Length: 442
Image (tube, rainbow, N blue to C red; front, side, top):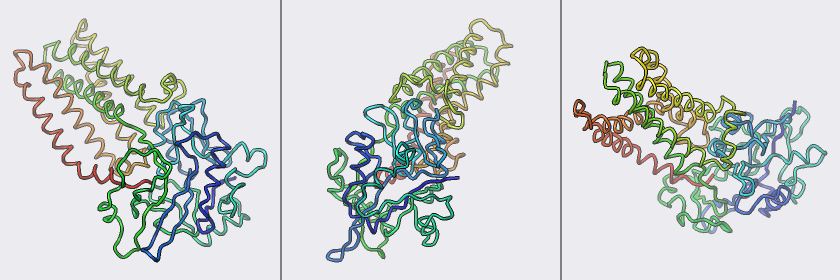
């Protein structure tokens, strides 16, 4: 067995960026993105200050969340333990970027697919060192085989108990650091300086996080620390994914209310069958459009079904939505031409898959171990939150629809009540959201 990793000796690093330049040259990495970069972290107070150089990159984790969340197997583990990628399978969903606690992945502007450090596999295959190792003038970057009992570097890692980044994320990283300080490995202990994104096209605030927030993260007993140089990282998921959360929640909620009404014996086919089915199908169609539009390789969306891996909740969720849409369509057809027996048959499956459509995203967010705000929440709390939002959002839409009918005027209050509860839920979470948004770069 072979499990390759790196030892990055910050004490020997001189911050020359030769590794970054060599990596860009070797892999033709476009401007604005990096497979390898160097953080500058300053500690102490003038005149007693120190600057520490820390090389950042993929950690080739033994329990790599990017592999687990990848819906098509574009990210995989090679026989030597390296986490590698296959351009031909990637759909550009950006799930891996959210799953990685080390911000090691990016979407290549040239290919629209996910790239990262792959240990220069093409060089290893012909007996050469990775390009960063070959050019480092101080040998601060060293390859280690964690399964080789005779590997001197592995012995040093074990003897000195050299640290890794973010061990609490439980990814079992295989990149260890020597000669560094805790502040260099933990972004929560240091703010990013005003000029901390040198050479970067950064359009955010001048100081991120704000100095007041950073001060709360740094113990008064410890020396002051700040990030003096780093690189920016794009936000993986934005408005389209947020919109999909709303539309699928509405689709699921409408059908859950319709199923409940059917169980209660409502005979109004328009209010219970055809109307809810039409609303849900439109919402699910918009959901699909938003998801496909958010892919960097939208023409490959069908890979989710042809090459999908169900251990990823991106793939599993796509199947859930497809099955839900089929059941909703049958529900609508039953409302037009079917008898009461159809509803008895369809109520259970439709309700189950509508609920799954609403809540499966909770399990997807839990796979995003790089996003503490999602991954560290209890699964049941996330499931309950999404189920509640679907019931409220869907209830608002369904209530507005059936309130137009004379025999259902009581539902006219449903949208108002649902909107009020949703506003309260988000106000309740606002402080937590602010804290997450103020977190420093990793």
